[in-house]
Amino acid sequence: MTVLVTGGAGYIGSHMVLELLAAGEKVLVIDNLSTGSRAAVPAGVPLVVGDVGDQLALVALIREHNVDAIVHFAGSIVVPESVVDPLGYYNNNTVKSRALIAAAVEARVKHFIFSSTAAVYGMPSVNPVSEGSELKPISPYGTSKLMTELMLADVSRAHDFRYAALRYFNVAGADPQGRTGQSTPRATHLIKVACQTALGEHAELKVFGTDYATPDGTCVRDYIHVSDLARAHMVAVRNLRAGGQSEVFNCGYGGGYSVLDVIAAVKKVSGVDFKVSFAPRRAGDPAALVASADRIRKVLGWQPQLNDLETIVTHAYAWESRIGGKQAKAS
Image 1 (cartoon, rainbow, N blue to C red):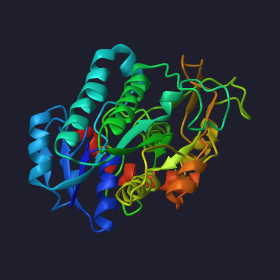
Image 2: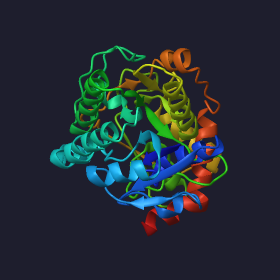
Image 3: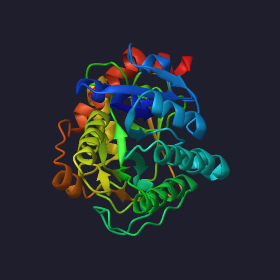
Image 4: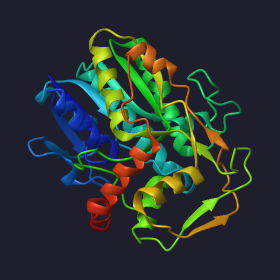
């Protein structure tokens, strides 16, 4: 049997491919390479350059490779961009996901793992945020992901089809062995941008908002190491294969770090006291966004191994200094 990884040439998808290979799984990647890189796909793993919205081609591909599980990462992820181009996001994240789900049902794939997001919660009034919290996205990005979750729930009730939707909080870091990392052009992730600033790729790092109701006045986020996140997907695949029911899981550590905490960690790891400037708040930034991560630990038995900000920053900085910047410029 084979696991199909959509978006497997991208940041999180490429880490998932490594996790699957380490578990002895056969892997097939489909990616349109709009943001992913061929270099991120390990040698020997078949890469199909294609569109997850092409339902007929997907059905043929699934049958040809005897796919029994799909892990779906392909999509668009930049929140401000989604506000400017909502139709593009609904097409990439919702319409094309619908085609992929339909292909899975037609080809009788019973196990589906979906890359969702904490953006489905919008501006939560209570932290930590549980899976039962109100779903009130404030961007087309968050809404496009929530719409796919709703489709999955409906399809699971109508067909022999089970899924896990994993709602990511702030994904960061890179493969500890340096095999892959965050190479997406124009990525806006704080830890990545801070590492790039330490390496001289930006003149300064801008902090948006210092008057939030947090310990130091800056936004607090739950940062999860990308390799821990890949392991969460792996245990979700195993759970479904073992007969587990359709579920939604938060993916975070249950604790948060402020923007200033991250800056201090990057300065410590890099040894560079780079320039930091301060600007007013950005619209739509919650003061804090921290996961309640009890469900995934209890139901799936997931145990994080890299739950440490300095470790996350160390791996991210190593990637940026050795490979990441060059790949981002080449993309």
